[in-house]
Amino acid sequence: MNGRRTLLGVAAAATGTVVAGGVAAALASRRQVRRRREGSTSRDPFGSLRSEPVHVTTLDGIRLHAEVDEPEAPTDQPTLVFVHGYALNLDCWHFQRLHFRGRRRMVFYDLRSHGRSERSPVGNATIDQLGHDLRSVLDQLAPDDKVVLVGHSMGGMTVMSLAESHPEMFGDRVVGVALLATTAGGLKTHRVLNPYLPDRLMRQVTPRAMALLARAPGLVDGARRTGSDIGFLVTSKMAFGSEVPTPYIEFVDEMLAQTPFEVIAEFFPNFDELDKYEVLYAFEHVPTLIVGATDDVLTSIGHSRKMASRIKGAQLVEIPQAGHMVMLERSEQVNTALERMLGKVAARGDA
Image 1 (tube, rainbow, N blue to C red):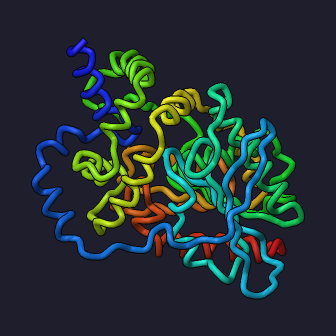
Image 2 (tube, rainbow, N blue to C red):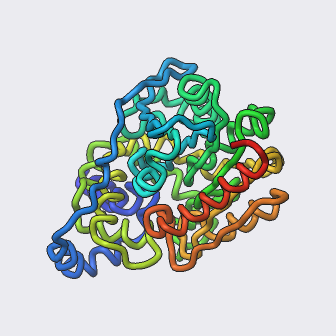
């Protein structure tokens, strides 16, 4: 029994989130982490941008938490709809929300089982279901609007799922797309978790480890608690490509730790199974921006390049020395790229 608990404890530290590849480094650098955190005296107001909460009811009856920022003056510009990634919540768009606030109508929501949204039935924790949920968000919060969809990581996959089930919307209701640090397929999660062990071994071990850990979610969540030194350094190395202010790391670590491990385990199988490359043709009908980060260890820059090569007319922006949370780490560059894409939307007469 003690051996099994030890195994679970080690595995929890290693795979408690998808961004759990640097545990050994975390243990070796605990003093360094503590000095850095103790030296931080300021905190960016992450999570402070709020609007009156509204709810979206999905086709299977789940209530999604959403917030809508209205512009200061009436506008006929498209509504921006932001779709966050795996184990995050709508607050991850802090700098984009701040940048466009007052000028654009914006919709933010927490994916099912994430943030303040209700938990999904296990069988509906899928990328395809997230695509259906996005359709519900559009129908209930922007029923008469032209929209621009901005998706990060699993949020980008969600946009692709919508394109697969409703390609007719792209060029009609959907007039622009931005895909940040995401992929249409070919993601090998076992390489992310441990790139040093053979593929053949990790393909077998990773799903079994996740299934085992899912049987003891309380134990895993305890190991992943917010504020742990291990979580801090793992987040720093896996979410960012350069040294960022301590509050950025703590903010992402908090979002990850607040996502129950059961949710992480339920969505995890989606990534190895994902194949949406045949869907990308739908994006040729609208201005499409693809943002990739050169030091992204979760969805490497190669995924962004491959998607751009499959979408005629897509604009690829590669941001050097940035990681998976590129919209936080390089917010000004991301916002500039979004502005350029929106300019193209306006030039087509869709804004």
